[in-house]
Image (cartoon, rainbow, N blue to C red; front, side):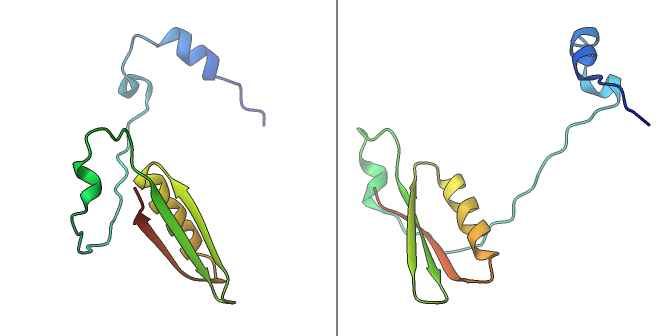
Length: 98
């Protein structure tokens, strides 16, 4: 059974109607975060700074170490969570570097 493509027709025909009227609804995603002690750093006091840098350090079971820098804390924590799910990763940390 072939399903017709309705994406293009929905956007033209019902663009003025709310999503609930066409059978769609918005779903809120909840994110669980660890409760850790957050120490205040001097990084937040610099008003010239446009963005901060977050270093994700991944430690592997064979002793190797890997690091990647992000400017968005959420992206850094999501990368660390993805790495933690791997069986060869011993630990992954997110730390603010600037």
